[in-house]
Image (cartoon, rainbow, N blue to C red):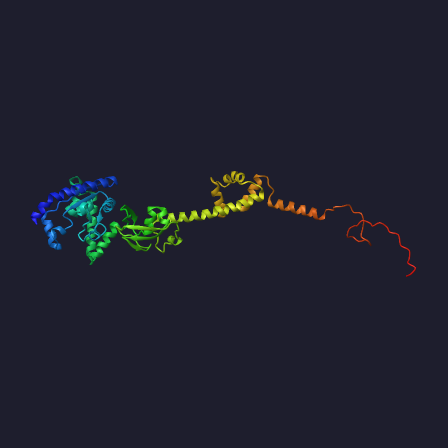
Length: 407
């Protein structure tokens, strides 16, 4: 094994140098600040792993190893996204010890990818603090980080960490199940955020408890509006699924937007973020607004036709009257019932010196009465036998005929 390892060491180092160079370039292009370097494997470490896993030398994944050390947690997941975007990873070899720390507190993201020529490369991703904790130990790291300048007291940051460690020990004493303790620690550290991936490997930072719909609306309003399903790792999940650290999410969409009002029901658990809810509210407000604009246009057109006023002239008076900048705003208010129609009509009548509805009705009634009772010809006669039903013209007098002698 020694001969085999020595023979290939130079080739491995050259391979890793090229791999690291490419990875650094990609991370720089994406604006991810992190240190990337090859991690040499000691021959004893290789031998121990071969013995533990009963593997031959050629079956080991991590003889070619790379470490990425970032300043921030979100940069760790961003780096992971870049790695998985450019290199195919082996799902069975992926471990997220950041989201699920080891019992000793170790945290790091482990993944194995197929590099150039199909060779496997093990990659560890962690923050600077995680790296120092792993290399120096938690307590040693805290003291070391504060340095001599902190004085004998160790500084406020050091004291805070010691207090946290004491709390951790107290939890361990109270909880018989170490898994229960880890759950509690995890809730303290990661309870508020969850980092997930797009299909392209981009990292999305969401509040813990977010759902696929929250993810969709975080990407874009249109993606959320057209969402009809979601996949996690290629598997269909319900809208109520709570995203887990490291999930890779694919949103299934349709052509036309069609969000459901049920998504706004907090008891159903479809959308949990205020960002997602506000975008759904905005969509329904817009749909209602479009309908109100159409209805308002019909109402206003009918009234203006009755008043004999053009839309252009009415717009000049109505927009400043109701403090609107656009006609659509006025029409939406009319269609939605926010503007009382009778008040608007009275305002227009006053502006254009048009008679009011009551005045128009009175004038029409008077005109009708005049047509009904006004005489059309002079009175020139009377009904035979008198009476008061009016007068008729007198017929000309006819002389009596002589009596018929035969009768």
